[in-house]
Length: 168
Image 1 (cartoon, rainbow, N blue to C red):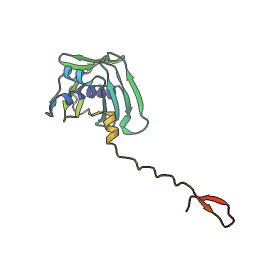
Image 2: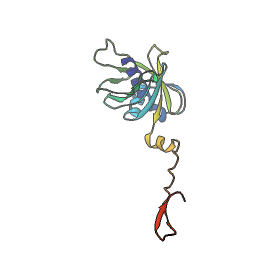
Image 3: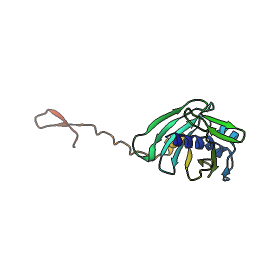
Image 4: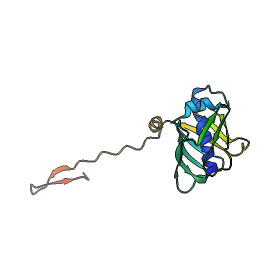
């Protein structure tokens, strides 16, 4: 679980730089990533199926959700301030109970997406896509419009009384 959280951190840190840079692919620099990512929302999918959505804040805290291997319950996660540390030449994470502070490689794929992996472990990666909730909502497939309710129409019966009928 902690490794997945670290992959999430790696990806989210680098995600924002993509929008600020050209569509050129390549490894992203730590300070650019920090300036662009802070507070923005990213969805992610990892190599073994884990997926979720998350946000890294300027203080290095992380909040989001994770669904392990893409099945089962979606769990909320929150990591404290200082979990993500941006240094001049690296992006690393530190959390209580970890014997070392893993660093991350963040590679831009296109203008909205990137791949984050633990440095030296390129096979263990997560792909991230920037989300803009208002735009995503506007672009989502439209739901069928509800049909108007048919108003009962009054009918006069032979006896001169009135009744309403929807089936007419």
